[in-house]
Image (cartoon, rainbow, N blue to C red; front, side, top):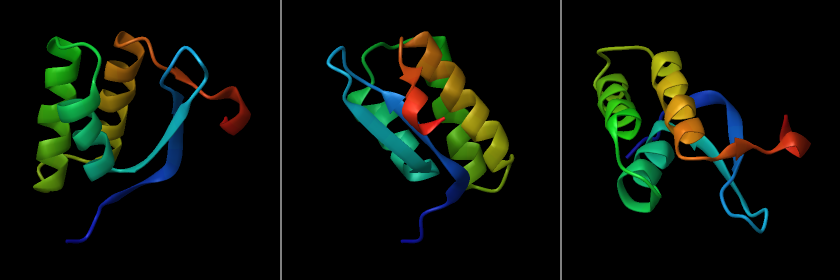
Length: 84
């Protein structure tokens, strides 16, 4: 299966200890939203919907990335300043 790159990788701090996770494909983002996300809610559900739509060429990869970033902020994840 081919993974869909979404441009510049996004690195988030995902733990209080400063552990990071890099996201560079729609599939990685979807996996985290479905399997590793710390909170459920509308932002997460919307991000999954938009990523699914992008994977089916019904919306842009950029829209999926923005929805994922919004869900990440809502979940309390922050961008890694070292990678910004």
